[in-house]
Structures are given as structure tokens and as C-alpha cells.
Length: 195
Image (cartoon, rainbow, N blue to C red; front, side, top):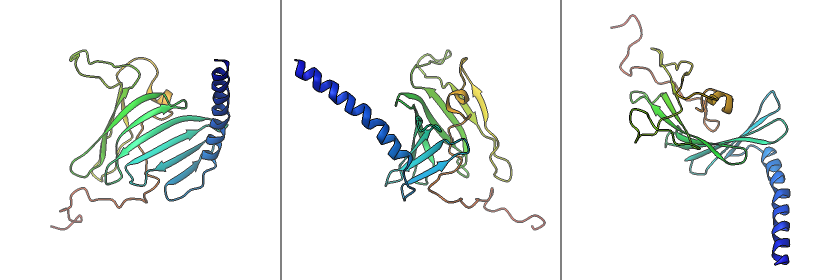
């Protein structure tokens, strides 16, 4: 019995020693075909890793001290757009689930819905339906530019921005894709002054 307890303690110590080494190796990762590292002015770093099939994009955020603070795992469609994500803290506890909504006419992001993964919150009007804790909407202008996010917090307490650091989980740009060419708002539109 004592031998089993000793081995459990040794295994636990070994795991505790290797965890920081693994994180240190991840921070020092070199950009490659499936890894992108972004260094921020405050000393923090973000590492983007994509699956070979381009269906999963993982974003890991490290503090300036090198501690893993957030993990966001995006599920991507065939065009490289996120269709949903899950957000975890540095200890791999799931915090939020997010779904993204796109406009049918041109595929632009117009809505995000975020649910709390730790507590199921039901809609008071329909108790069988789960209620998001935050909804983010975007307005697209006539030139096809997306507005700043319009955030609706549906529950009191800490906001998503206080926890996540930004008011939206949407990717500003996919680090594995170059700038996409802008689609015209109306493909049959003609330049101004012509008929």
C-alpha cells in the first residue's frame, strides 16, 4: 500500500515539473505552417495553432510572466470562418460557449451569442430554452464595413469583457489567411454616375 502511495506522489511531482516546461516550450514555439505567435506590447503572447485540416483553430494567451491565462478553441467552416468556439481559463476549465451568425447575402459576421458553460441559465419566458449571457451584434454599412460591436449583457455580474479582456470573442483576422478581397455589396452594382 505504501509503495502505491509513493508512486502516486512521484507521478504527481513529475507531472507538476513537466507542466511548466511544456508551457515554456509552447511560448518559445517558432512560427510554422500551423503555428503563429503574436507578441504584444505588454509582454504577453498569443499562440495560434491550427489543425492540418483547418477545421480547428486554437488560441492560447500567455501573460507577460509566461503563465497560460486563456484558451479559445474555434471550430471553422470550409471558408476559414469561425462557426463556434469554447473558451477555457488557464486551468482548462470551460468558461463560455460561443456561436457566430453570418449574413446570407455576403457572409459577413453580424452576431455572436455567448453562453455560460458553468451554469445553465434558462430564459424566463421559455424555461426549456437556454439563455445566452451576452449577445454581440454588428451593423454592416453600405460600403460593407462592419461597425464596432454592440454588446448586450443579459445578466448582472462580471461582464465578458472583464473576464476575456475584449468585448467580443470574434477573430479580427485569421492569422493563417491573408487579407481577403472585399466583395462588392451588390455584385450587379455599377460605378456612380453610370446607368
